[in-house]
Amino acid sequence: MLAGGSEASIEPLGLAGFCRLRALSTSFNNSPTESSRPFDSARDGFVMGEGSAILVLEELEHAKERIRRSNGTARILAEVTGYAATGDSFHVTAPDEAGRGAERAMMLALEDDAQLAIGQVPIGYVNAHATSTPKGDQIEAAVVDRVLRFHHNKRDILSDAASMTQHYMSSTKGATGHLLGAAGALEAAFTVMTLIDQIIPPTLNLNQPDDDNVSQPKSFLHVSGGRAIKPPTDLQSAISNSFGFGGTNASLVFRRYQDEK
Image 1 (cartoon, rainbow, N blue to C red):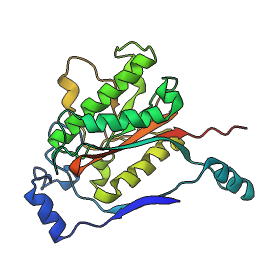
Image 2: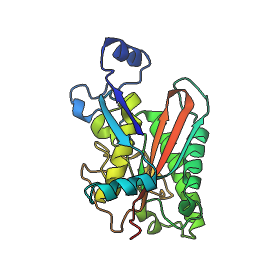
Image 3: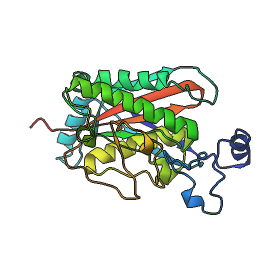
């Protein structure tokens, strides 16, 4: 099965529509490479992007047989171990400020993975949907924090700053802009590559996160500073969020593939 998306929406009608919605960034018109800045306190809207990504999905036994026939030249990149979609129908453009649909999507996707559901494996990386809008990014950060804290409790980890350092979050839209219908597919591919390479991409233009002034430490670390990082421990699992207009929410859980040999 081929799963993916393609988008080429940078044209007069699409731009005019998002401009009328006041959804696009305008504060950085003189420095456009700084316009897309998810989670940054100076963000003021998203930047439209174009592109495409396609992933090949197959059953595990089918993939193993394909590898055998290729004499080992093919490989399994990662496993999809959980997925969920919810529809909160809150508003055609505005997200639910309580983040209920987004939170439910993440929780259901994580429950799909048996080891994550019982807290045996930590969620190493969150590829956030964050588009650089003031409300959306704030709501998603709060949702991710709640979900990770829930799983911390399952693993009996104390909620102190030291224990939070194993969970990372970034939004690759700081680099790509918002690909709209292709965003979920591209970010799923980025999430898989994170597990393969064990390198976490940064959120570009994230200079001052909203939550810097919050007294209680977050359950995740932002990856910022314009540089990817290699975590001190191996990433075994990651989740990719896609939360769109109309209250459509989806989360995908990927696990690093471990050969059974």
